[in-house]
Length: 115
Length: 113
Image 1 (cartoon, rainbow over the protein chains, first blue to last red):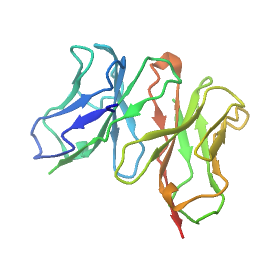
Image 2: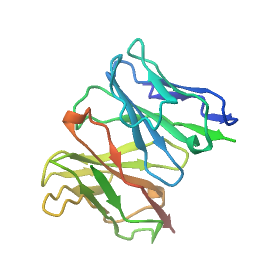
Image 3: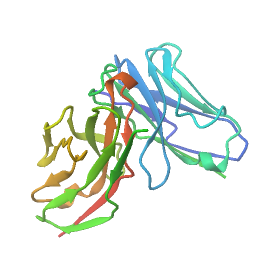
Image 4: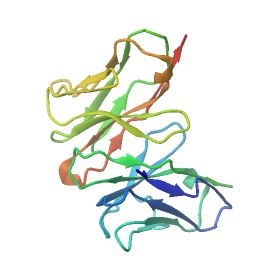
């Protein structure tokens, strides 16, 4: 079956531009997560949705970052006025429910480069 | 806060060698522990997990045992193959926290013939 998909796979933005990154989770998965992975580092948590409710946004690095999941399926991560430090791979993951041991299935990521 | 520490890489081994990648964690309470693997050009995949102390997770010849007394979850494989070359991430999560994952920095493994 289809896994988690993300688009675009690569994005180059000039500093100051706004970008929108899309995530299509596995159908029926309740939980959706966004992570940021800098080069040579492990992924770091950004935000978490259960259905359409954003239950945790403690990892968003600034108010330039905004995420939504209005119908409880597709999610968009928006970054306003991009800065060079925003360059990273943005990973989306989904899981069937919110249990702590439930497997998260990851998408291939969107590599954002801010020039 | 919660954190995960992994041994730094890259780790280079000959095929059929024994593999250990160390992982220790700091957490309040008893998290679930995971190893994720990222093969070249692919996304993160769950390799194995353990949800309570003394549990052993295993998959594809890899094993890791949840050791509460040493707060460790070391990854082992008795005989590595070239196809095991990848980046390995240790991670933890808590049920009450919406199961967001806290990852280590990753360990790159290179297996040579």
